[in-house]
Length: 483
Ligand SMILES: Cc1cc2nc3c(=O)[nH]c(=O)nc-3n(C[C@H](O)[C@H](O)[C@H](O)COP(=O)(O)OP(=O)(O)OC[C@H]3O[C@@H](n4cnc5c(N)ncnc54)[C@H](O)[C@@H]3O)c2cc1C
Image (cartoon, rainbow, N blue to C red; front, side):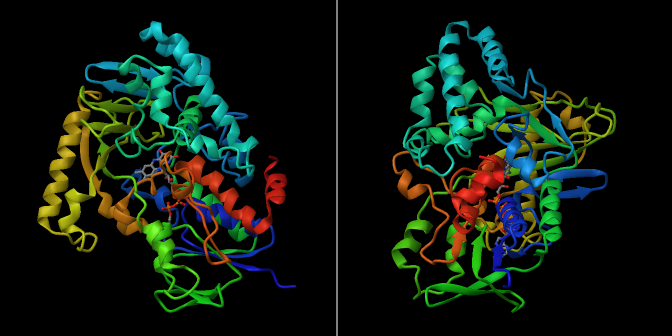
């Protein structure tokens, strides 16, 4: 019997992982990617010797027995050149003139912060123990539905319940820009999973995120599948309640038995003509969901031998910054791992950027948005560099040249609405409408990727299992991953 055909739209992390699992299990897999490069938010680009990450910068939980390790082992991603971040300071949180370390290892984390906040030791222990117990559910409760109540609890209320000192609350939320932490809506599950994995351990990838995408793509091909770039899916044809084929912008037809979309759910529904199984009410529901903000990035090439490499991330916040309340200035500073391990070669500065600031250029084509847009980016970049000087003295003078990208860049390269960095925002007050199932009203069309459940590399990797379970069955997935 011929293998069943699976067509996957989008070669982001979710699409590639689903392709890998299904190709390994005998399905005839084709991944279609609109861009020249695969990876979506894992893409890198090269300028001279410098390799810049465009999205992903580090992961948590890659140590033995931790949250991400068992998933990465399955895909052979554990053997990529990962570099562990400083155990005593994975993230340095700078608020105004003060600096705090978020260490790895749960005990180390509590001890380090208790040194600055001795009265909060007991609260920190409660905080950490809850994070650990939520983190442990990621695999142990896979497919049971038992994690759903955690989507119905408020992250901010939990933080306030454990920690009385407002400054320590800021520090604990400090490894974040103003993209995803919304005081009113963020569910505990998301806050806990992400923070728990980074408290377990933090890791950078020497050579950048595209290595992850390439390794997955090699795997898909080795199992007989294919990954096709420059193939933008423009239509999903529906007949009798099933998608029958995907049609790309060159008119190529890709018939399939199953279709998996790794692109934003709202963009997915736009590919399906009205009048079929997807009712207007479902379309309205999906398109009305709120998305996270986008990012402004400065990718800076550093003059040789000038700035020491720092094996920690730096999150810099102005004195008045509050990531929960959309206030003040916040910046993430990330160093690429240099070959010599000593001097920085390239540094990325990431800041949030509201799409409304870019609206007037949104109709323009990439690279051709005009001088006013270029001037806006230069001014924003100079602000970021000046601000970063506070944590990295001498940065301005050390920069040889820099490149910038905005939410418009992300929108154009990954097709996320408004260039949102982390996709659909979940709301603990209405988890049933904001946490999406991989199933759609069309029987053989499934969703995957960061918009469904949990964003980031860990979240997308878990969601890929949920999506594949719809085809292979839950028991098969559990057996395959040893859950
Ligand atoms: C700036 C930034 C920083 C981040 N930093 C981190 C980090 O440090 N650690 C971490 O864990 N996570 C980080 N993330 C999040 C993480 O990178 C993402 O959650 C994850 O990579 C998303 O994967 P995905 O599969 O959901 O989709 P995407 O990466 O969005 O991939 C979707 C793919 O679909 C393609 N596509 C779109 N439309 C079509 C179409 N019509 N036809 C064909 N192909 C199409 C796109 O080109 C893209 O390649 C970051 C994200 C951003 C934006």
